[in-house]
Length: 188
Image (cartoon, rainbow, N blue to C red):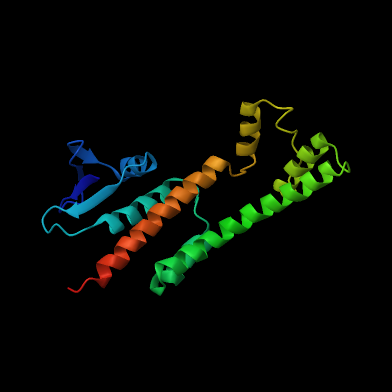
């Protein structure tokens, strides 16, 4: 676990890299799978939760918001809830979207198996259904992978990587909340 020290001037120092580190670089380390622990240099107080919250705030400020307001609202509302309740609240919308996609796939495959729909037509219909009424695009088989990726990005369609990043951010946020819950439940 990488230890980061926060000094009174609010600068963050990476003890492993032996240099000051930005919130953006901390976000990069987390995306790369690093675990971090942030401590106040003078008091040795655990500041990991506060710092991870700052990382999320910094990321949201720099980009068009990637976290949906419903997620942030759920986090605020769930501040007194148990972690398992919070995890269920946050996971429900993502599970629902995944279930919808699976149901679309299941029904299209049934039509194809019964011979009521050609496989190529099924792929095309799936693409149209999953883009939720946006202008239909050619199937992935008709486009190169890079062209398909470009079209998806141009339309603002989230990719699997986007969902994976969001899931990683949710996991980091949940971990931060868990640490906050642990630190607030300790007798002082």
